[in-house]
Amino acid sequence: MTIHDVARHAGVSSMTVSRVMNGKRYVSEAMRQKVEASIRALHYSPNLTARSLSSAVRIGALYSNPSSSNLGAFLMGAFRQSGASGCQFLIEPGVTEAEAVEGLGRLIESGIGGVILPPPLCDSPAMLAMAQEAGVLPLAFATAKPREGVSAIVVDDYKGAYDMTWHLISLGHRAIGFIQGDPKHSPSQRREQGYRAAMVGAGIRIQDDWITPGLFTYRSGLDATRQLLAASRRPTAIFASNDDMAAAASAVAQGMGFKVPDDISIAGFDDSPIASTVWPELTTIRQPISAMAASAVVMLSNLVRQARNGGQPEISHVREMLTLVERGSTGPAPALT
Image 1 (cartoon, rainbow, N blue to C red):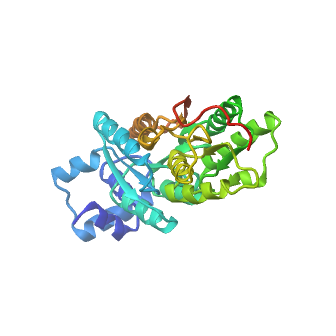
Image 2: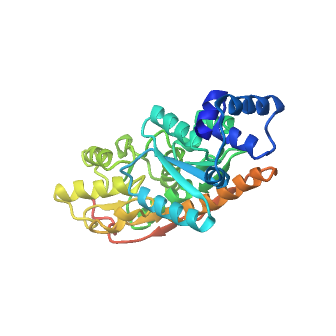
Image 3: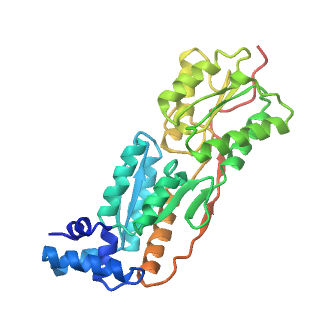
């Protein structure tokens, strides 16, 4: 018999059972009596080891893109920091919305006190509500739209995209194609807005066929680049919303006989591992994913401890700085063709 069996019998979360057993606040008297009745009915008696495990700070995370080159950096930062912070870190996949709900449910059942939600889950009212209703503290990771009452790691995707577009303009490019990110992600929208603002600010009219859809995946970058290179006026530069798609753009362009960056410049976003493993290495916007994941673990573990000690968790929005990293994939615009 485990704490999760008691939770299912009482129709509550495992965290609620843990709070009742440890005499914590924020549990109504009716809920306390319900849990205690289930404990008696199931003859539940936790041993000392189980008690020790239930008292440990446990946080979880979901991920929706297992092929992302950012995932390794995220996990490295999170696992290293969880060890240093003395907490347990669990992770669940959730590629589709239904899988994400199931994954969050499993994390809740495991007794987590907080959960890190990356895009697009960080912007999902349903996911945030599901966590909060279970007594789990959510943290929105890399969101472009931080919410009041939810702690977040925030990056300025708009400025990052604006700076990259302006970098290409400063190299003489006027025909700049843009590969969008997954429309469900708030960073995607802000990155496109930054691109558009820089182009308009430079007095450049954006052709409709210079903007193509992508999904933050390598495969979507292949399809998007083929569309861009078939445009009525072929772009001399392509700015992709992440490095996976930028790497795909470089592969397609070189496969078609274009030299990068002599014939066409390619730029990405994130500075994920793939940016420095392709040739030529990608000019990109550095987003410190590993450091951001470590910050998220520190923030969330502290929030869980505050709640366990009967305090009110202090909600905060931490903004991470982005930097432009210039490498070999961008150069001066070629003569017009």
